[in-house]
Length: 515
Image (cartoon, rainbow, N blue to C red; front, top):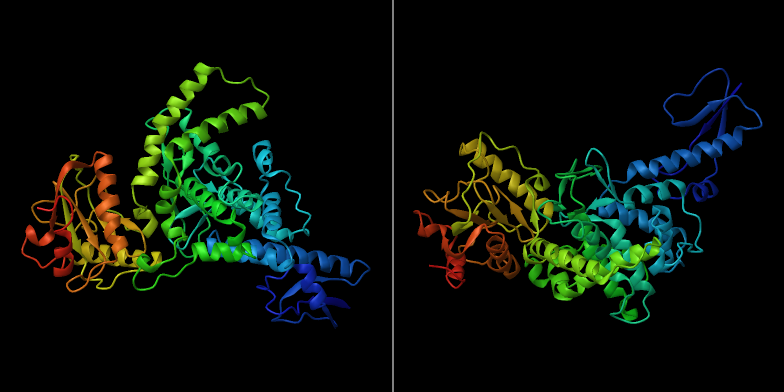
């Protein structure tokens, strides 16, 4: 006679319930069959009846459900928030700071530098489910592997990738604060320590700053591969650091503290835009990350925090204090490196790379531009005729336009240099360095920037226009890609076309440098 232990849990493969609680609510039912196996059901284990049956069954259930926890969650912020909610639901009375300490312990974020500001990671909370704990560890603990895979990062709904470590450290520091707007160690925990590793080791010209990368999937991301693994500070780390500072400062005000951490992150990362785009969106959402960070942070203070971070790290290692000359040299190096950081993350707008929106390869050999260029040409796409409000929708529009330009027009690639969504992002077309196919006869001397939508009788959102008029232009001029005395023109001024639509054309005539 053989014993078959069959799973009778509701939605056995997708419960999200800790295994011990699941066993308590839905005990195993044991079915005995003579001389045959019952087909068509899922079985946890087939074995001869003996005294170890129940013990083995319990072990298998724990392993089974724990393993499924890791497999069912991707490296997307939405899934991380689901995992966080499971932690909260397991002990509903826990305060957010206790949950944050539980996450910190699971992720192994407890070196002397972190403990100096946040103290022990002993939360006093309940033991976390093994599978959930392992998912947290793999998703939060940051590192770059030999094959350029960046770990400890997640894709967010706005299309950017965020390192979770600095985000969670900033939140914990904010919740521990006793005075609104004053958070001990906030800048050092979220950004200054990582910046010190990059900016104090030489010029960003020799040590790449802010390397970005691409995901293996935009719908179920698991692996993020950097474009340049030699960078000592990646763009996801910067994004996570910015978010940690912004949210940490927000929750330092006790009147703004949420009851649940998952609610705070959902509101910040998952806000759905209405048809007016960011013009009517709340202040504190991830799509406004760079604007909010620029408004909050004083560059000179950030330089000071980087220097303090280096001094603290030396002290914690038992090393001698810096001499005045050495400290002066360090500060000078950090100030110089900070210029590149400010340009990349406080001047330039968020630009989704080609790999970020899933571009097909260029067909043929691209022509390199001779920089800086003289012209900036404004277009509208007309088709798609409606603004896109989400990263998914804008990315799909980009792929659709690229297919049309390549397959129908017979071009080598999408024609535009850059494309502007109403989701808060600019999308890389041919980019800064390669000649486009946007303005016949002038492609070698100017960039072509298109707004997604038809703007004959209406305007793009004010925020999306500001992305181009203020930020993209400043980024181009400051980066040596566009002449400081550049000329702005509408597409219709160069060739016979109605582009960029009457409404948008009349608007850009009021912009600086229009001729």
